[in-house]
Image (tube, rainbow, N blue to C red; front, side, top):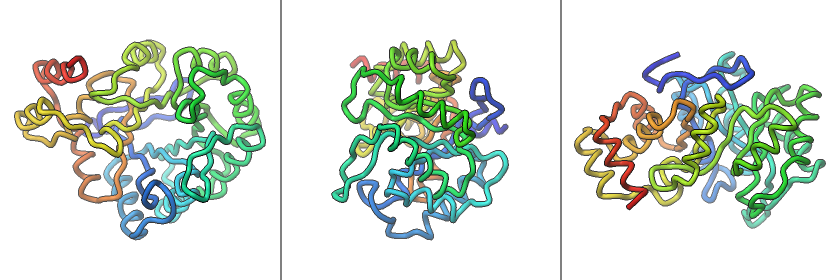
Length: 288
């Protein structure tokens, strides 16, 4: 595993070891993560360069597009390198108006897994995350949803189960059903509500994968971030990613982009080492 890719991490109870700097495929779809991209060839080129550069962890979902990102991943990378880990998620579906809607019945979850398998061209999915909180479920029970994924795991369609947008309480509930190898929640320099949860998961060896690591559709903006970036001779976004890698060894990054230039910028962040003073200044952003 490459130190230039942030070092490596092995998902608990698995033989899946990945570089900590990965790639999120959401932005490969069209505007609002809906429909095809304007330039499918560039989307394919981004994926090919990401993998050629050492990325071996790709995050996706069949409700991106819908179907679009998985079909692009298959076009670009199939047959897949043996070391490539593709993590997908279920629990939502898209309306004709690009709306995000809940899709969590047993039938919908099974259909979503089958859609991911078909569009990715796989017989079994490495990791499937049950996506919960973004659809307004709060701290609602998740046991029933996870039981469906556990059944699909037993049937061989899923190798491992993860969670997305969940609380520590929901994690504990899900883990009583089956091993949970990763949690994917919103977290970045400014949005730090999961600090205690990350520390808990780190002690237990469970991966934490922050989505919107750069602030999402509204990029992180801070004079302190800009000042640290200038001192580090890096971009603010590179500093924000480097801070996450240094925050905890169980954090895996999946910054997404449809641009080759931004991809290279993101990957270079894994080589950036921030000093303790820089970390202290960056930590002050959230408290301020």
